[in-house]
Image (cartoon, rainbow, N blue to C red; front, side):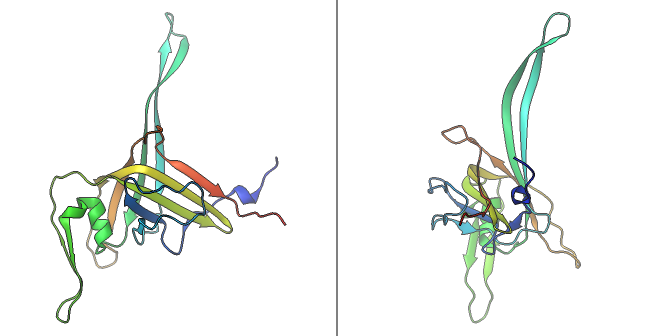
Length: 192
């Protein structure tokens, strides 16, 4: 098989959003194009830094007497996703960072706009199903993290020439099959 530009992906988010979340137990997608379960909600805009998925395989080697490497071991795996959520006033974003129970939204009224109260505690963040979806021309890629949660949050900077975004590191955990994530793609190249 030779080179093919059909295998090259530029990761643009879908118009409906590139990141969606749902409660644990939600039916997971099993391909790149089938509509997501109705329980999924879009996280909203992500900054132009995009999304970075990192895999770290914790490996080691065992040496024989004399120093020759005679075995390689795998001690574990770590999968994280880094992104910067641009919609700081979004209830979903704040719930992912501080826990749904710590975020209260009040709809707009005749006297006030939409209100958001966030109570910051040391409570752990909620585990959710996360889906990352991108397209490139006709191709689509979908990464499904069946169990993941926000582990680290970066600084939020308020200044007059930039948006105040929520930098977050999402930690993936293995599901009952031992999978940290599932990746599906469709190159969009249909036959006649």
